[in-house]
Image (cartoon, rainbow, N blue to C red; front, side, top):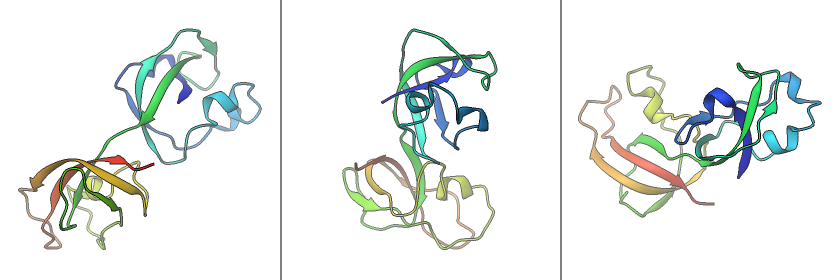
Length: 145
């Protein structure tokens, strides 16, 4: 999908989480092409940078550039069993209230409760111990659309 992103961020491989529009976006003539296709709290990766800069008051350089983006892959630590490369499952956040070094991998940005995911890579058992005693596997996920 095509969206607009700040000139300083318009690099292939750049990842970002869409946290919602700024107030200034409400009456912008580029609103539908800029944020209209993006889903709140999703993580995207820039696949291709296009030409044709446009002025934008909310970005650091005052300029946006069209880019092609897709949903980014997500790294996850999970206690789910029977997970292998190519398998699909529904993400359910773990029952955990620990604020540990692994929190961001157990509750990664861009992954929302009940998302349908496909395992792109099973990195195997996580080497460090979970404070809750879960046996964790490190996965790289894509989305089933």
